[in-house]
Length: 150
Image (cartoon, rainbow, N blue to C red; front, side, top):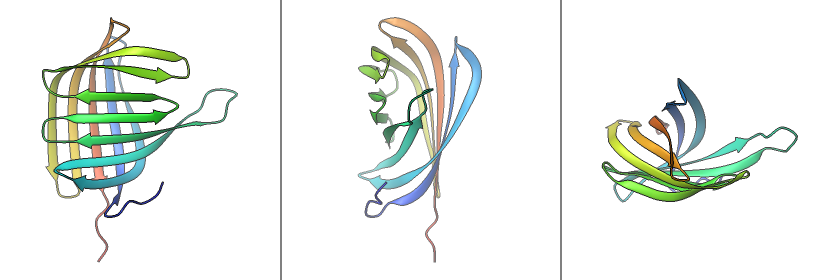
């Protein structure tokens, strides 16, 4: 991953729970880049998916966190655009190696907490695929930004 001008290294932890499927919370940890542009936190990182018998497939993820929205764009093995904004529904597509699904995200709650060298975002939403309700979801995105070295 090329370091963009003014970017800092960040540790990204994503906690997700899909109620109605499993109440178990999953935690994934990534290292990526952080920038603050036009009042928006911009985080990018790479994910690798391993399917049995195949080499790992890469997806590049870009997260934009504003005061009242979060936008997640994935490109690669999984390609999608997901937009979270309180009390608004977002229609899109979710492309995987197994096919493309119509995506509906109905955001019920979104909160962003900013502290020095850390940003935390909480999202509660309903997810539907191909017009079928799938689950109630909760995601917490925690970004720890590397402090500047003196």
